[in-house]
Amino acid sequence: MIIGYLLQVNIYIFLGLLLFFFYIISLLFFIFGIFRISNKSKKTDIINNISIIVCVKNGEYSLPNILSDLHQQSYPGNLEFIIVDDESTDQTKNIIYQFSNVDTRFKYFNTNSSTSQLKHKKRALELGINQSKYNWLLYTDVDCRVKNTWALEMSKNFGTSDYVIGLSEVKEENSLVSKFQSIDFRMLMISACSSVFMNYPLACTGQNQSYKKDIFNSISGYTKISGLLQGDDSIFLQICRKYKKIKVSFSVNKESFVRAKTHNKWKDFIIQRIRWAGDANIMWKYNMYFYFIILSTFLSNLFIITLIFNNNYYLAILLLSVKFIFENFIYTYGSKKMKIQTNQISFILWFFIQIPYIVFMGVASFFVNNILWKGQRA
Image (cartoon, rainbow, N blue to C red; front, side):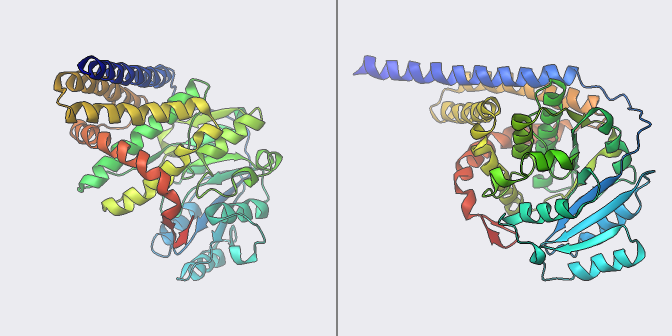
């Protein structure tokens, strides 16, 4: 009995270390990508007309900010701003019309007029895409802020790309959750950027991305992911890569970065991330390698927690030390490559919180269908 127990323990340790080894390999993949990141400004004489699409559902408080940012875009080509009202019950419609009366580039649409069978945000996005008149589509969210150079800097990647991923960042405020969110989002964006420079794009965000309309139409839009709560960014990217030979680039110019909404309440942040985790949970359908990275991340952190609960402190400290060295390098050097300031104290807070956080998210991802999004259930 004792020998059997020891064998079980040894197998458990062996499997845990094996998973941790694969996790470190995935970190090395991102580190190699970071070395290849180039932030040299791209020059192009080609000016493309762009349709900028923003979907809104009850966004009266943040809507004036993003519409003002769009109005001030310093872009030499033609722009149209397609604002899709996803059946809002507040003053969203009136605010959009106030802008469209001053700037005719603003165009108002409401999903009430859509006959699409799609659900949630993808229904609104599809309506905006169908109403757009230009081939290049550029996206952000109503809660974001963009610089007046945003469209211009993103467009500098159009000449060599079919799909352009832009960086989003979160402003760190005084709350612990905002500090955690800021570092966590930075790590996700650095990883997404490095994977592009490794010629194997893994992820993107709907807060800052652009692609060609004919790419969207050629793969029948969102029909392959019609039932998902999310899916309009990273999963859509993987579908594009699977069914079309597309060229993907990442805009590392700071003038193209988007500032996303900062959460100061853990509840709001957790709900947002559970929705994201729902996509990660089914990524195996679209990119098995990416899914294995996600799975090894979850199981490695779970392994460290079990080591601590089983009083195996020496091994836990050893793995934590290795993990810290690799992840801190990604954060520090990746930020340097993108010319973004770092905060080591916030990183240390993030490092220790994210271990139980990742395990919690992995479990919570199975309950994504119980999460409300803008008053709607998945």
